[in-house]
Picture 1 (cartoon, rainbow, N blue to C red):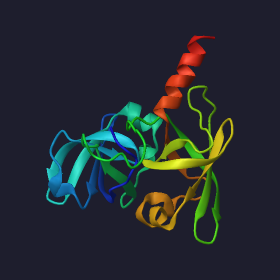
Picture 2 (picture 1 turned 30 degrees about the horizontal axis):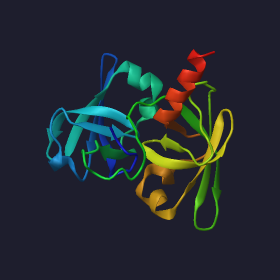
Picture 3 (picture 1 turned 120 degrees about the vertical axis):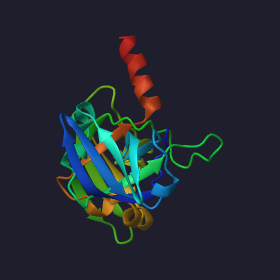
Picture 4 (picture 1 turned 90 degrees about the horizontal axis):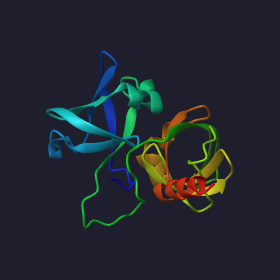
Amino acid sequence: MFTGIVEALGKVTKLEKEQSNLHISLLCPFTKELKIDQSVAHNGVCLTVVDIDKDSYTVTAIDETLARTNLKHLKFGDELNLERCTQIGARLDGHIVQGHVDQTGVCKSVENLNGSWKFSFEYEPNPSNVTVQKGSICINGVSLTVVDSDNNSFSVAIIPYTYEHTSFKSIEVGTEVNLEFDIIGKYVARLIEARG
């Protein structure tokens, strides 16, 4: 489990295809604290550490992960939002995030509000994936509060700290992002659907 509070940015140092899998190597400030088999969220995608080499480590994304997320677009030098799994007893500063991306969305607008930014996103409608005003959404692994909510679109407001310390500074109109909708909302939507 994760919280959507980004610990660091990791930089892609190597991308290696093996059959339908993609091995992703990253340079990261906390690599020396990692262990093989540990879970780390990469732009909100939970991946397992399979190799560690000095200041970089490697994870593997399988075909299902690549098809469902924006990791398929990675290039050498790209920065990813990183978060290690939550420790029991730690504060839950964001919201409950599983590291399982539901679908991707596309940035439709970025407004500079003279001290903050408003990002608007659109996604393919899905009855299970809903947002509510002032509810939670996870975008590229960042826990955020929904500002405006519609059937297949929503917006979020970004403070300067988040803008500078996450990959939000590189998101522009047309950028594909990973979306994980609130788990409680997904369960409620499923229960309503099951009851007809």
